[in-house]
Amino acid sequence: MPHTGATFPRLIVKSPRGMTKEIEIGKPSFTIGRKADNDLCLDDPAISGHHARIVKIQEVLFLEDLASTNGTLINERKVDRKQLQDADIIKIGFYRIIYRHDIESAELPFPSSAAPGTDKTVLFTGSVEPDRSRSSQSVAVVRVLSGKTDHPEYQLSKQLSVIGSQENAAIRLTGWFAPKTAAIIGRRANRYVITMAEGGKQIYVNEQPVKGQASLADGDVIEVAGVKLYISLREAAI
Amino acid sequence: MDSFTIQYGATSDTGLKRRHNEDRFCADPVLGLYLVCDGMGGHRAGEIASAKAVETIHDHIAATALHADYPLVGVYRPEFSGPTNRLASAVRAANLTIYQESLRQPCYAGMGTTTASILISGQVASIAHVGDSRVYLIRDGTVQALTCDHSLISEQVRVGLLNEDDANQASHRHVLTRAVGVGATVDVELAEVPLLSGDLLLLCTDGLSCVPPAQLLRVSRTCTDPQTLSDRLIAASNAAGGDDNITAVVVAVIKSKTGIWARLQSHLFNI
Image (cartoon, rainbow over all chains, first blue to last red; front, side, top):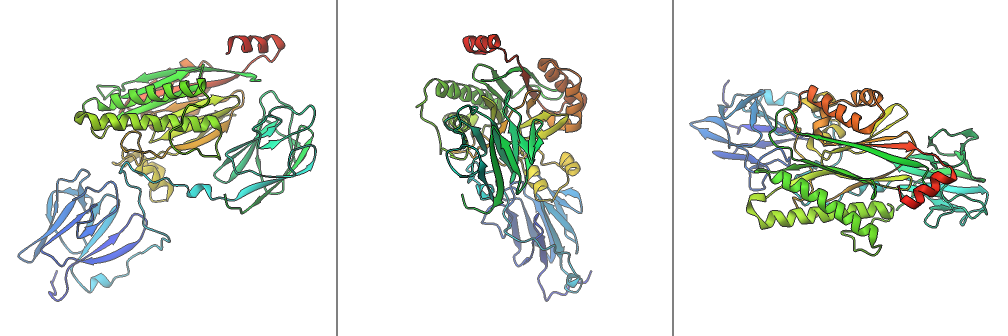
């Protein structure tokens, strides 16, 4: 493979999320690893702090694994030290890195799957910041069509909302003979499921008797312990 | 009020390839607490971490059950019930205990543990988990995972970079993204599930991950006794290779008599 000499050899780095970037190997010792002081810093917990380096010895580039925990692969073979050839595919952690030192072939279309969003990987650092993004979901609203309850409308912001006469019930029944727990509505990944109370009375969704549990959809009407409830799913901030 | 009773079975095994069992479990039907922990760390530190986690979580739940105003560790999350917040607090307390121990003793540096814990109060099971130990719900002939592993592989599968088959072969299978005891704080994942009679809850460490859910279901159909079931699950895992320590805790929700005598009896004897 002819070396043009005019351009630096390059690495095309493909992240696990499909983002690509190009970086020139402009130094005689070019380091790759997870820590910020590397020439190529890759954010992946499977990559060691100082994972590998590329060294230039008389115009020839070698890749050296720096005794990394999970190893370095070139064209699917584990290597400690190997001379780099054009179009070699280096695998480090979940990153794929393509080595190019021929400018013309580097112009070949490279599949870059458009991945929106950030290139954030979860690090095994111990101090993990809480991820509460899941909780900003749409919240179901329950409107009371008939029957005795303490409010005319409820937001189901809890994981489990108890329908019953007990004090901490989310939907509190105030009828004379209302059971302590009549049913429980649970939320899991934006889906709502109603479960009958153990040993409780029959509940109905859209006039169909529920056996054990039933999924709820927008516009469903629940009948439980003499109370009719209308479910609506709408956007609301928690 | 409860018209069901809980029975449980628990089995832990070293597996076929390891020399020590770093898994620990706890089953306390009085508190309604069931949990498994899978320790990690060299020189038996893993065993220390998982044993400490079990002990701390149990003691914390016992203390909060006795004293309503017992201080909780971490933030109270209003979208979850009181018992769920108590369980989260217990896991955070365990995190702190293990972390402090690892700072005190150099040979324990970096030790940690996973946990999958459930606390049953009334009809609701609170679930707290960290790491790659799992909780499954077997109901009406289907098996459902109630937890998502906090592992690198699982995150990759979730964003669509790996499919399930590749994930089982991958070399980074055991890289966790969260663990109890490796940092000053831990993000505990919480969930709540209403129980129905006939439900089976299965808590297991990653030794059982090599047994696919369909097979878990098949094994669960072979018997009704929870102890026999947990024994058979361990046998199934060992038959599939037994690469790792395996622990299974099976919690069976059984319909009980709702007559006045049965209710009075359960009230008096607190069962």
